[in-house]
Image (cartoon, rainbow, N blue to C red; front, side, top):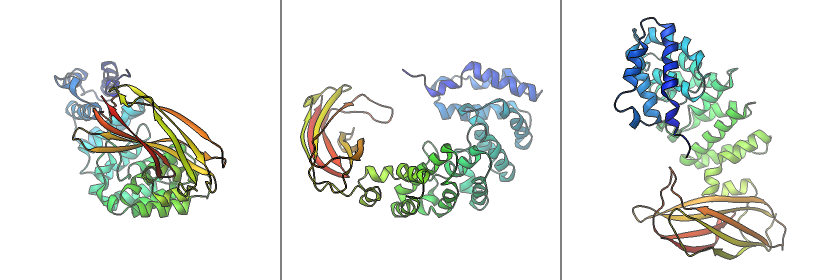
Amino acid sequence: MAEPLKNMYSKAYLARFADVFAELETAFSKKKFLTLVFDNEWEQKELKQRMRHISICLHKSLPGGYEKNISVLIKAVKKFSGFLSMTFPDYVEVYGLDNPKLSVKALELFTQYGSSEFAVRPFIIKYPAILMPQMLKWAGHKNHHVRRLASEGSRPRLPWAIALPEFKKDPAPVLKILEVLKNDESEYVRKSVANNLNDISKDNPDIALKTAAKWYGKNKNTNWIVKHGMRGLLKKGNKTALKLFGWHGAEGIKVRSLKLSAEKIKLGQKFEFMFQMLPVDPGNGNVRIEYTIDFLTSTGKVSRKIFKITEGNFEKGKKYGFNRKHSLKDLTTRKHFKGGHTLGIVINGETLAEKKFTVV
């Protein structure tokens, strides 16, 4: 089993973290800091809880107020990089919200060593008139981490972060940023643009589709962004999104011989299914093939999930066979329950065959 991410904040790392601050600030007590960090609740804290706890303990261990302490953090951050350095912008989020001028400069610097995508969001909510013009400037920054922050920080539905309700209502300010970044030279930035577009599609599908239609076909970079950004709508079988990529329904396509390896499958086990697809008269031959499972939830309701199999051009009149395995092992994002389930085969957004099975 993989090591939990929260364990990145190890005793060895935090001892090194404390050493850096002790070198920069003589009044900083390494012993006090580590004693505060490793309290009786440390082991129970999850990743973001540990990050916030470290920020609080750091503040208690530094002698000054926010303005003095941030000057120490600005020097210290250069010794760190990656996810672990996100403690620095978290400190700004906790203690710098009443000082946007100083905090915005700090977030711009700190994101170059990790990411300020979580920390910037309370500032966007409290100071939109300051932050949105600033983020538009960041979209033209020479550092790709800062450019990514302009997009990632403004995502309406960034995972593990507070939502931005005003942008869920009206994403126009976000789209101004994305327009600047859609042809960015950095794949890291373009991926954020695509994820942002996917966020927008959840609350404003028509706006996202209009944007996608405007961008698609311009170049390979925008094509990739649009394809990735439309993934939510494609999974929902949105006909406008499907047609944008040449998937014009399932007329002229047949699915036959859908079979499961067993009608009763044990909880936590894998099962296998197979089927045949016959493009009798598939139009342009462009086909997207997916499968769905209607999972039983803890309340007895059904939750449908969709999984991609493949996509491409298929020759008319030829028979194609598919064979896939699916695991019913619990995940961090999905718990499985005993009872009736349904497997479906989806062609260009339309369910053409279904098979019921029972999890025991």
